[in-house]
Length: 230
Image 1 (cartoon, helix red, strand yellow):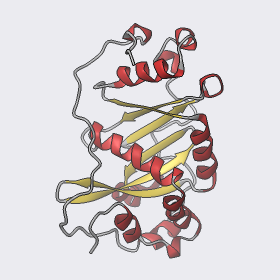
Image 2 (tube, rainbow, N blue to C red):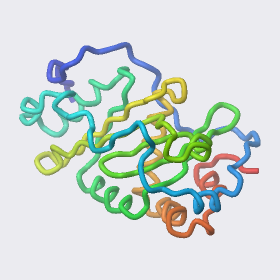
Image 3 (tube, rainbow, N blue to C red):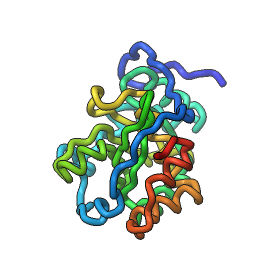
Image 4 (spheres, helix red, strand yellow):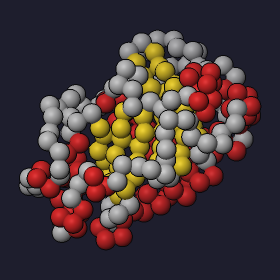
């Protein structure tokens, strides 16, 4: 398919970065967070971490020319959206309206989860909070130490302006702390978050974490992702 000229999108481009790799790691011996389920039960999950205002997202009109975008086919819109975000320090993605509504439905009662992120010889665990049309990620250890005062590492916004007309929801990720998270890691987190909420088997672990925390075992997440456990 021919790529559209990026004059549709308002900002200049930047140098491309490395693509994300989300493959299974080798097999060293990292430790899982201790007593995660009891910690999750103790800690209140009432609001997003401070420093993030989920009701005031970056408007879609500040990213793309919405009027021009209305005249594009869904395929050309997605192609232009992806090209615009390539190498810009942001993550661009898209999904169908049906999948978005499933994500919205499931996250309404299961707002939190933990995702291990592989880093060379071990993993770090990210704590995920969902309040659609937003997701945020912060380090689990930071959240355990600071609770709702922990700063987000990474925020995701879903734009539904074209959900009805083009069956397309545009997704944008912004890395808040580049010292904490690379673009490739951010892309992996988005892909894994979608897989846990949209795959029926994986979603069972999300439900257990939120509704039956005493029954949740972090090693089940590691095994599912083919990461080594103790």
